[in-house]
Image 1 (cartoon, helix red, strand yellow):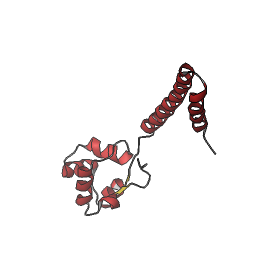
Image 2 (image 1 turned 45 degrees about the vertical axis):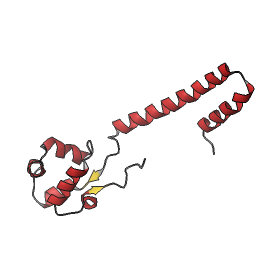
Image 3 (image 1 turned 180 degrees about the horizontal axis):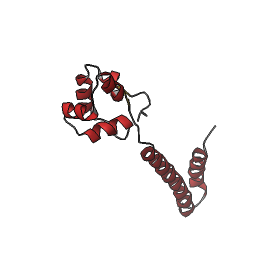
Image 4 (image 1 turned 90 degrees about the vertical axis):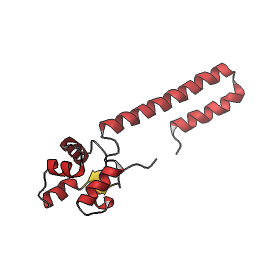
Length: 121
């Protein structure tokens, strides 16, 4: 089933041959507006839902090792707030930080961070 946007854009391309350029501009502006609105809605949803939050096992690993957020933060060279943000999904660790955290727990990055729900580009 085709989306309304696909149908509308096909109509735009067909009308290119039928109507004057000014009418085509109006229809293309409709397509552009639709695309822009869609993109903004996706972006708003992305940021309000925490983006492509990577799930992490850091809280469980910390509890198993009787380790506080502060102790882990000092061990890997970041602030406690950074560890908190990673744990709740507000921040995704850089590759270097993810490596440090995984190495601290003597695990592979994939064993500490779950990338299964991250959208591919």
